[in-house]
Structures are given as structure tokens and as C-alpha cells.
Amino acid sequence: MFGGVFKRKDKITNEYIELMGPGWKDEFAETKRLANELEAILTSIQEDFAKVPSLDQFLRDILERSEKVAELQKELGKQVSSFSREVERNRKSTQAVESEFKDVSTWLIKYPFSKEGDKIREQLLSMQSEYTGNQTTLENIH
Image 1: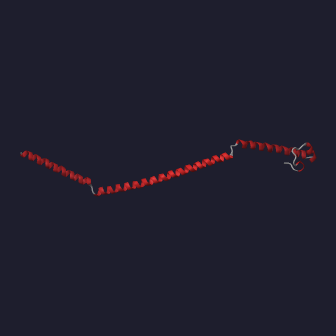
Image 2: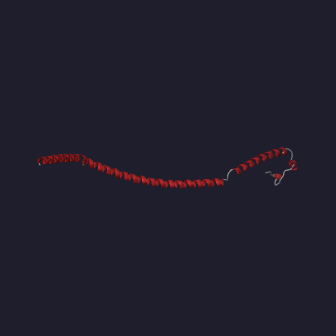
Image 3: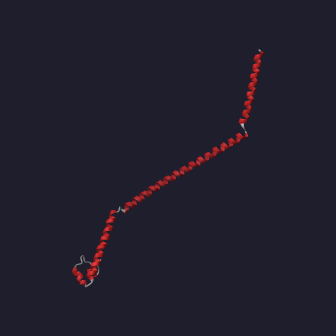
């Protein structure tokens, strides 16, 4: 910290301060006060660093979390892909059913069995009435 006469001296005594001449005493006192303040600040910072968890551990935790996020993202990608394939299969299946429904609907409109069925039913009822009438007539003849 000190150069010149005091270089490599462990302690600066009053004797050395006197050797430097007048005015040095006040300057040294101010320097010593500032050095003590600086040492107190450095000690405080060092104590604060000791309280902070290891940066290495913090970085390991972050790395583990990012690896876990990457794994989950990969798994989610697989699930989304699988879901997309299933949606596509269902879409194709739905289109096939819809197409078949349209074909059947068109066919039923072109060939209305219900109307023809009603006519046939009416004819059968008429024939049955006629048969019943003929049966009654035959029974009355005997």
C-alpha cells in the first residue's frame, strides 16, 4: 500500500512518520483512516459473500432445471405429435362416415322406399280386405 521509505514495512511507526517531515503526519492519518474504512468495507463484502449460497451450486440447480424443462418439452412434443396423428385419423374417419351418409341420403331421396312402402302396405291391406270379404262370402255359401 505504501511506497518509498515505507515499502516492505509491516508497521509504520511514529519514528518513520517523523522521518518523512512536516505535513506527513496529517496526510498519513487521513490515509490510515481511509485504509481502515476500505478494510471495513472489504470485510463487510467478504462476509456478505460468505452468506450467499455458492454460485456453483446455483448454476448446477439452473442447469438441472433447464435439462428437466428440455425433457418435458421433448415429451410434450411427442404427445402433441401423437395427438395430431390421432386428430388426422379421426378427421379422415369422419370424412368417410360423412361421405357415406351423403351417399345413402342421396340414394334414399332418389329411391323413396317410404312412399313405395306406403303404397305396397295399402295394396296389401286392400288385398287382405278383399280376401276377408271372399272368405265371408264362401262361408255364407255353405
